[in-house]
Amino acid sequence: MSTKREPSFRESVDLMFNRAAGLMDLEPGLEEKIRVVNATYTVRFGVRLRGEVKTFTGYRSVHSEHMEPVKGGIRYALGVNQDEVEALAALMTYKCALVEAPFGGSKGGLCIDPREYEPDELERITRRFAYELAKRDLINPSQNVPAPDMGTGEREMAWIADQYARMNTTDINARACVTGKPLHAGGISGRVEATGRGVQYALQEFFRHEEDKAQAGLSGKLDGKRVIVQGLGNVGYHAAKFLSQEDGAKVIGIIERDGALYDPEGLDVEAISAYIRKHGGVNMFPGPQYIKDGAKLLEEECDILIPAALEGVINLDNAARIKAPLIIEAANGPITAGADEILRKKGTVIIPDLYANAGGVTVSYFEWVKNLSHIRFGRMQRRQEEARHQLLVDELERLDRYLGDAWSMTPNFKEKYLRGADELELVRSGLDDTMRIAYQSMREVWHSRPEVEDLRTAGFIVSIGRVAKSYEAKGL
Ligand SMILES: NC(=O)c1ccc[n+]([C@@H]2O[C@H](COP(=O)([O-])OP(=O)(O)OC[C@H]3O[C@@H](n4cnc5c(N)ncnc54)[C@H](O)[C@@H]3O)[C@@H](O)[C@H]2O)c1
Image (tube, rainbow, N blue to C red; front, side, top):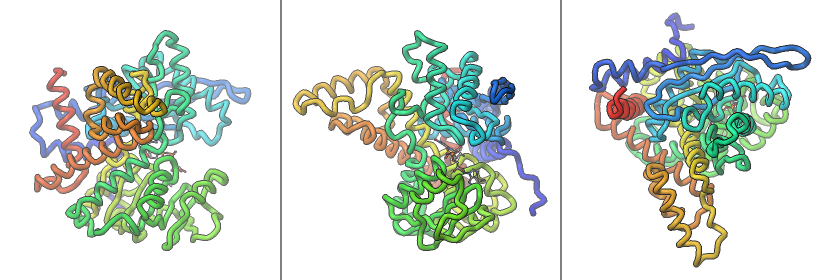
């Protein structure tokens, strides 16, 4: 057991920020302005459930409003607290800046274990929480736009959107008040898979660069690489599925709440995911070795470690024993600042959260743009070939006029649009472009400045620079 005090999650993010800001030439005082959380709202509300009034505590934190709306998920978990939502809100600011999604950073959370409630109870709780936030403009298409996070998904987003629409019946843009909605309630194709898909695209991009792979002592392709994933939820499941089914990677370990499964020959991700949905955990899954102390598997030999569950799982206690040469932070904050230092000194390459899990907010941005434009991407696909091209050109011009900068980050988008690609193809290509471009912006800093030792610091330097420019341009 280490005797050094582990910083809190927010302190950890701030320490990583400071490391990068210390290498930058920012105007005096601006560093602090960017780092601090602007405001955090705490709400306590009651809902009558099972014959008694139950009081819930929730938060919505706004880290930076250098761009509006601010954006960030809503988490349902018992451990939600102010420090956590503030850390997550800060990460959202840096994440959006890194992938050039034009949003400030925010995050919300409700202290609740959603598994303890029936769907109709969860709906009442969610609607009440949404009401409390929306009446203070903490849910609003132009001010603050939530999305799913741990413990929430499409269903909760649909309730939130509907609650906001009921409170703002004349707002034609009401649907844009939240992203991650179901397709039939204003959502966009490919949002559910987006964060895991982004993790896949991030690894694909990393593996395109020989020099970067060499830093981790890796070579060759993703094909055959041994992967251990922690958390087979939305992000972990999709990342594990795509990497194994499309890139030929071998998922040898899956860590869940109740333990871990291990098989050096590879695990069946689909079968295990279905088993978790049915039984609530991995214990008794037939075949692979079951390890009761699941977190121990983080320390097993593998090529790529994907923490995709919680923050702080790689910390001062276990960092020195982590053997993976490459860690991609699919979760937010899985590596504490202290562990980050230990791993850096060991030469472990870390693809940092602010980049690695930005696929979710990137596709959320497409969804928000789609809601505001009131145009369904790929709408003309089924029109007759000869009439279609001109219609698409006209439609694209209209979109461009409204939403100019939306397309600039996706160079393949126009070509695909004019070809009549469907929405899912457009979303995936926009996400792929975004993940490639953002990686390249980080690696350029990483390789061109000797004092920048790691991708995380490089990512923060790119993000902080952009936020600083935005503050400077508009005045504070
Ligand atoms: N959903 C998104 O679009 C999104 C976007 C960006 C970042 N993230 C981050 O990704 C992480 C996971 O989010 P999610 O949306 O996949 O959540 P989720 O609720 O869908 O899945 C979380 C998974 O982790 C498992 N888990 C919980 N505690 C665990 C523990 N102690 N050990 C092992 N497994 C555990 C759960 O059983 C579940 O399967 C979070 O850090 C979240 O902030 C999510």
